[in-house]
Image (cartoon, rainbow, N blue to C red; front, top):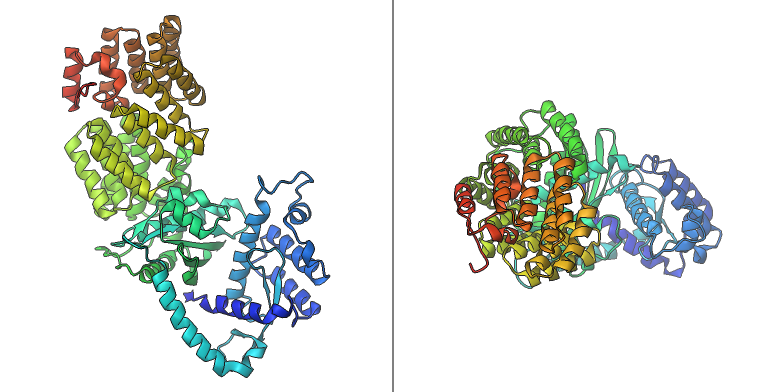
Amino acid sequence: MCDNTFEYRALMSIFRARNKAGPGASVSPESVKSELARVLRSSTFAAAERHRRFLRFVVEETIVGRREGIKEAVLALEVFDRGALFDPRTDSVVRSEARNLRARLNEYYLGEGRADPVVIELPKGTYAPLFHAAVVSAASSPGRRVPSWLFATVGVLATVIAVGSAWWLLRSRAAWQPSAGPPALAVLPFLNLSGGAASDYVADGFVEDLTTQLALHPGLRVAARTSAFQFRGKNEDVRQIGRQLGVSAVLEGSLRNEGAHLRVTAQLISTATGYHLWSGSFACDLHGVQDAERDIETAVAGSLGVRQAVRPNPPHAPPAAARDAYWQGRYVFSDWRRRGDAERYLEQAVVADGEWADAWAALAALHATMAFHSEGSVEQEVAKARQEAGRALQLDETNPEAHTALAILSFSYDRDWVAAERSFRRAIDLDPSYAWAHKIYAVALTSHARFDDSLEQIRLAQVLDPVSVLSGNDLVAILYNARRYGKAIDAARRHLEMDPQYFPAHSLIGLSQAARGNLSEAISELEKAANQGKQYPELAGSLGNVLARAGRVAEANAMLDHIRKDYPDAGAVAVSLSLVHIGLGEKTQALAELRKAVGLHATGANFIGVEPIFDPLRADPGFQALCVELGLPNHGPSQ
């Protein structure tokens, strides 16, 4: 079900215009107190203790005439128990909770508070509430709130609303359209109004479903979830978000989870003007959540003037248990430290519903990613991913995530480039907004020295996912392997300005400096990377290589011992040992370790044809034969 909230915003505007004489001029303190008690008793606020305390404080302060004293520092102390050292520049708790409270009030008055005689509003830009009077019209539909003074001017108002609605629709229809190119959308994280972080995965899962489905609409570019979610909890203007993400509209909203029932509100906003283009309110249960998602998807696509997605198969409706487990698995999927949890949840999803292609595809992508990064047994992860992707495509051949999982296996494990490229292209054709497919395809193209194609794919990924950590690092890696060292260093330093803790950028700066012959600068950067990323043997191998080239042979040999003793992944260890042996000038040992890495299907071996650190081996017949065996180029400095 859907309630269009244009009525709510229009009435708020009329209420504010009428109350210019003074906040609450037409509402008695007793009426406000009664309304406050009614709101705080509601199911919307029942589990939201922070918001109850916030609302009670600002309403009571306003009633007793202390409206002007409701400031951020006062709220931090009185409501959120911050101390005297509270600094709003570093602690945004008041601003973010005010935004959440506004959303919860909006939800309340769209639902169970629709017939209340008084409305409490917390306008943007202030922490002091406004109070508006309303009565229920006997002539209106049950539960409709109508301002008491409105009856005297109903004819005039009807005309105003008709003309205003036509103007608003025309204005909003034009507002999203950029000067050139197709419409672009970002689906921001929805506010979780369920009363605890434990249910964040429900709101995030709902948004991820929406993002995926909207990306299938022809002519609509949708920003990747990883970039859109960078704005979680930030009270930024939508116009600024639009500039950062390169989108013409944002979809934001809130979600409240009550057991198996969900209440969702959503608003589509133009980033050019800040005007609302559409809004709606929906109620559903977990089993029927796809109906709400589809209603929002249809309304957004219609508001943006794009064609509906053509889906050859009817949408699958999984049971509530399967969807809940799936959302929990997706929630922790991207955190490498919690991939075991993701695997457990996604396995629960396919047990609960073995006919759900999306759940099988997510499992395949998880296991393919683990195989790519040599997490666990590579052979076992590959076998699982292959079986799961096959099951997903048997159920739905149009699933882009399953095709991408197969592409990763073909590229990194089977070393079947023709099959890998075919699967990458199929995934991207099915979903041109699928940033992850563009990123992995860019990495794979790099291994075959197709640098221009690789840069084009990473450019597309960055357009779709402009603030992602991975996109920036993949660009640096491509530039390094293409021997554009200055550009690689500049790009990595820009990345570190945004995220000083992202140690892979230090590694690529170090490798680029080493390729230029600046060994002391290289060692400094590689030490930073190795100290921060101690779990990765490749970082130790790169550092050992440059230490050896700088004449610090004892330290390089010590690094060999460290790699052999302290890392469990035999494939990654073999690649890392080969790097140190190259630095020491021990080509025979280096080639022996590389052959071992190839036999173990180590992902790092797929890049020996282009990575500059292997240049000392390129003239060796054994290395050349290894490149031929792997179907890789032997890309030297002059090529």
